[in-house]
Image 1: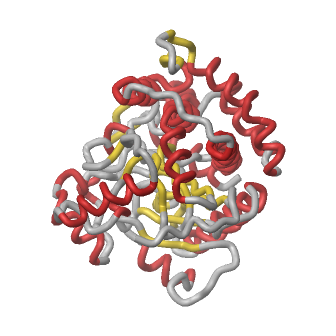
Image 2: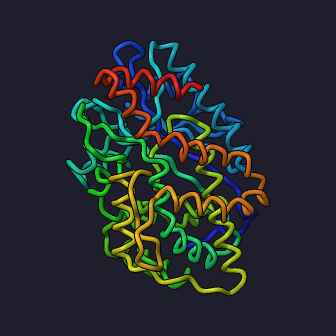
Length: 373
């Protein structure tokens, strides 16, 4: 397997999965093919990234190009959001962003007519059919394969905080689930998801992936859907733990925080230091606590065993990482993290809207309006 970890380091790429909805009823609409055609996505090389299909026809993915910093990535993301909103509006549709649609039914969604997705349904059946969820992925470029493994291993301890900050899916199939991120347990039903194992080095990762491919359980490493994974084709470490964000400034802020985390871990590798060893079970438990309570609960402060409030841990982490963000030109966007800590994550904001009139249409109205800001 060729590893394209050639740099430049710390480039940023952001992917967002967005919902396509009817502008009046707010129901999901199976319209990805017509929107791709209208946008000329298949035939035009865009300066601001890509517009792509996902598993279901009611889902649209936008992806920036590799950017030098988060400010550039944010500019591309805003341009892409505006483009797909305008394209959708011409057909009486709207674009929304959240971790789940509050009242949609997966039974009403069509699967995209692409071999990869049809094969996925054939292999996973119900597990794939009910995956009506929306996530954001962040790619950070690195210049060394062993460094990428070190960073991916180290990022595992940060996944719960990222999930708590980004939790934005408190509703599912018309029900208030009691979870801040309902998206997490829905996706957990997939194989090869969640908290990844730790790998010794690049050779170990490559050997384990090759074993799984030879065994016929997956076609290639892109069928590893862990919260964090190296992506050798792109030369990045990809962080996949976050719910899609309604407000674009929160997407960019999370990307800035992730870039700073990667920078800190890369410097740790360059200094020849070793990572602390964390019990996988406790990493996974923290992930669950973050999905359940968001920023309003507690998680275990590893490598110790003391429980701390998730907000306190996030604030401490933000203070430690801000110098790294300053070096990378991403300190300004971190104001979005402060906004999440002060005013609540997306899940909390959705619940405030819902509690006024217990009306999920009002929740969707707020999601669509804030997506467009």
